[in-house]
Length: 390
Image 1 (cartoon, one colour):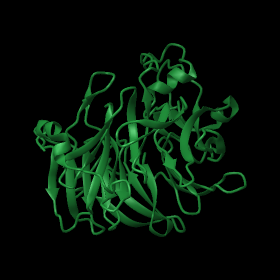
Image 2 (spheres, helix red, strand yellow):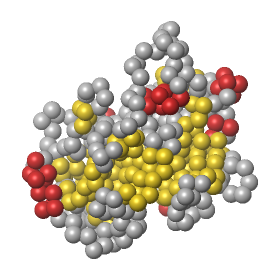
Image 3 (cartoon, helix red, strand yellow):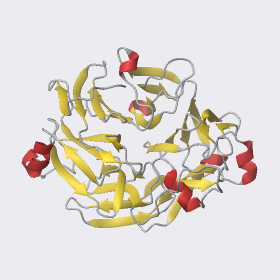
Image 4 (cartoon, one colour):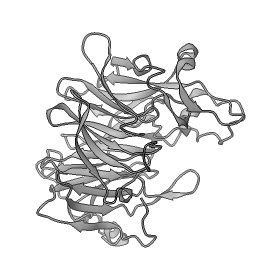
C-alpha cells in the first residue's frame, strides 16, 4: 500500500471495547532488538542483541525470548554480479531473504541460556512442549531432481548456483536431530512449479511453520505459492493436503486456527487474475474452501508484497502484520478495525536503504505466563517513547 511521507507513527487508532488486551512483540528487520508494546502502543521492554541481527522472536511460557537471527561474524553477502561463478553454499545463503544462522533462548534480562547454530536455518521456528525445536533449513538439491523442477526465470548470462530445496528439522535441547522431512522429495516438480517471475535459485522457500495438537506440520512456501500439511508420525513424512496458486500468490504465515482450519496471509504478489492486493483468509483443509476473508476496502488499501503475517487472538480477533509498511492492524471476526499501530523504527539495510519492515508481530494476553509479575510500564523506556512521540 502507499502511505504519506508525513505518516503518523505509533498507535493511530484504538477501540478499547473491541481490542484483545495484552502486549505486542515486534522485531524490526535489519535492527538489533526486539520490543514489547503495551495496548496504547508504547514501548515497555526491549531485548538488545550485540552479536546477532535478529529476524524473528517469540516469547516462551517461561518468560524467555526465543530468537532466530544471523551472526554478525559471518561474511556479508557477495556482490550482486550474476555473470560470475556462483559463490559457495555458505556465502550464497547470505543473499537470500530471511537467512539466519543461530537460534538463541534469552532471559528477560538478556542472558543467553541456550543456543543452536546452523548456517542454513531460515525464517521461522516452533518450540515444542518437550523442549524440542522445529525449523526449516536450506538444502542443495541433487542435480537430477533440480532439473525436473519447472518454472522460474533465468537472467541473461546468469550463472545459476545449485538449486535449493527445504528440509524441516526437529532437534532436542542438546541439538540432536530427532526428525527430518525433505520437502523437495514431497512436492511435485511439475505440478508445484516455481513462479515464472522468480529466480531459479530456490524451489520452495519455506517462510512459516506451525504444528497442531496431532503433530501435523503446516508450512507455507513462497516461491511456488504452496501451503501444505506434512504428517509427522512414525512413518515416512508425506503431504496430506496442499493448497495455493492460483488461490494464493506468494503467501506467508500459514497457521492452525479453530477446528484445524488454516489461516493464511495471502500477499497477492504476482497474482495473475487480478491486481496485486493482499488479504487474510481461513481455509478448511477438508474441502479447500475459504471460510473467512479480510481484505482492504477498497482492496488496494491493503497490500504487502512480501514478509507479513496474521495471528489469531484469544477473543477471535486477528492481529495482522502488513510487513512492508510496518503497520499492525487488529480486526474483529466481522472485519471491524479495533487497533492500528505503525512502526517508527527504521533501520538501514546492507544497501543503505532504510526500512521500517516487520516480518511478524505477536500479541500476548494479560494472563500469558511470560507476562505475569512483570513491571511493564512505558517509564521503563521513557527516553525511547519520547524519541518516537509515544
